[in-house]
Length: 62
Image 1 (cartoon, rainbow, N blue to C red):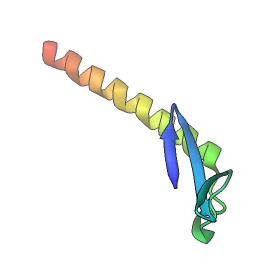
Image 2: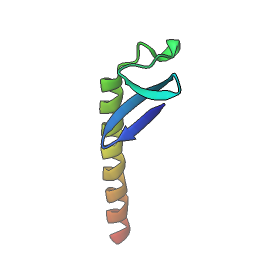
Image 3: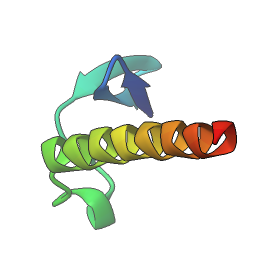
Image 4: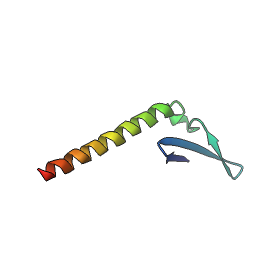
């Protein structure tokens, strides 16, 4: 289970009916995924989306 919380991905795995935090995905296809790089990419995308929305709003005012 993955959560996005305050600009950080938090990963959990269900073991013995309890969720435990993990540092990497345990899904084989995602095990090599660099979580820190993914986090940076999401933050950049969010920033660009906000900038694009502001630019659009400003263009409507003109």
